[in-house]
View: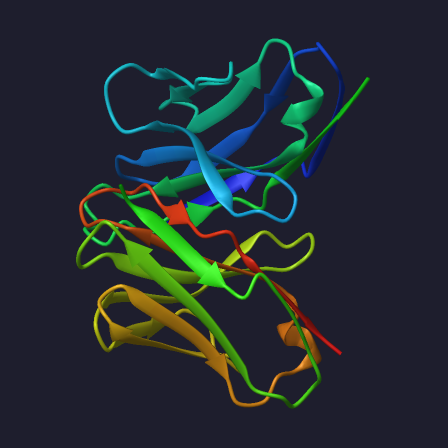
Length: 115
Length: 112
């Protein structure tokens, strides 16, 4: 069975500083990997995903994540955060051979950006 | 385009009262449908998923039930709410063969 570990439950960061959110997964098979963002009192929105190909994936708002198979990690980074990046971030994994595509989510990391 | 809607957005209910949360999907056929619960500080918990009309799988034993009366409609219910049922409920769907989930706006339930 797959599992996802997000090592930090909360990450405080100053505006315009870089941030890294760590995500590790356990799986003996190939995986699909996702990062979702949740703003207060809203549903989750897909931020970026890795399905295959280049191990570095980027989002339209400056986030990037790198798939590292040897370390079974998919850490999320942004070089300079904005106040509007304050949100909860969830890492998730699914098994490509599972036609139902059920995602396994991490516990989430709360990012709080302050001026 | 594919969209998902769930309602009500917020709900305050007394202990022992019934519950019905509804979710509908547009722009896709035969989606997989999911109900998640998000309790404060506890991440996302998968409650139910459905791969077709009338086909419901429960992930955890609980006071809740789910039904799928139509292809793109998913309902979460309870006959008698408990205090522990309070939380933020999220409906989601994906199409077969992809892992990406699309989430509704969420329904915040407070049981008093």
